Length: 426
Image (cartoon, rainbow, N blue to C red; front, side):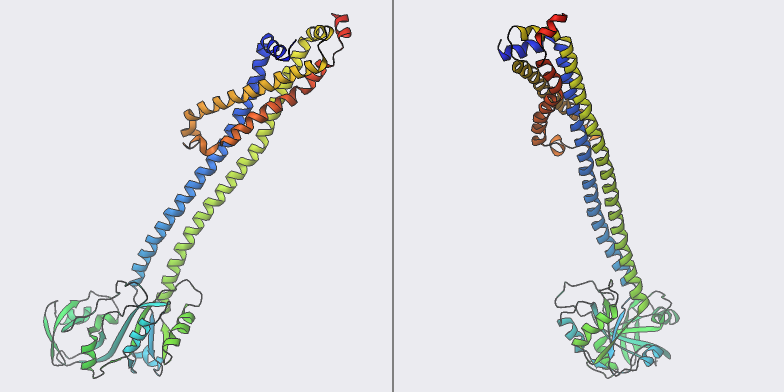
């Protein structure tokens, strides 16, 4: 009897047993594929969520930093550069420096490659009488901010004062009944009120702003200034002022640098907290993802061996039942000269075929059901994203091998049956 015919007759004669063995292999394959797909779809979806979160966070951080920067700019300049020989106690007492330095210092800074400050604003400040109104005012001469040569232009913190115009603080224009566009005289020279500031509650309310060149001419200090104001841009470092001084003193050694601490601190803390919050949220999402992924892997590490062992036990049990039910047939085949090796090969081949066909059926069942439930259970990912072709091929190879291993002992028992002993009892 040919081996192929023997295998075919074996399958046809025990169709139910063969179908149940094939079903066991199919269910094992479906379970393995579903577990792998669920784990990978979760990981891929989590990666997409975290990537989107990082992208959204970067976008929000950029917007937040822009908003913070705009808000912090409202706090004004926080770095002041004064002449080296200026007594700082005098500055703290009267609010401005009595010593002066060349206006070209601002240009020198702008043409250097400074990185710790920007928004350079040279100014000339002095308290004096407004004889025409019999008022004491703080006069500040300012020009447009000096742009840094190596950086993109930035929007100015304050607008420059045009020649022939004055800008008045709230208390000055309110008490004098002046409105924007009014003509006024200061120190014998005619000006137009270009802008009237709202109330600020600071010395700005009694301050008058004038074009720098006109202020220098009025005070007989042509080409001189008594301060350069700037805005620090390295807010996240621990020693902000130390870094700024180290850099600026190399360029302007005959100056001294001070910082308004509260403004700088508010700016630094706002930016640092915003960044820290965003990083903490992303780190928390990643930690949660890793924890959930580890739990799923542990669950899969328990589930898959149980499924495989159950499937192998199922195939082995069916093989034992098949052998037990066919003891007489096996005895007859041995008696008519069918070799034990042929019988062993027939039973193992039957198991291998059941495993292979079961794997094919399992793949088909999984593929068909995947498209029906992928939106609900697999985050609507394509099957190729969670299961590879190589893994499908591997299952088609491993399933028959495991089926053969499961059926080995029953098949060996069938092949070793003594025909004389079997037929003596039947």
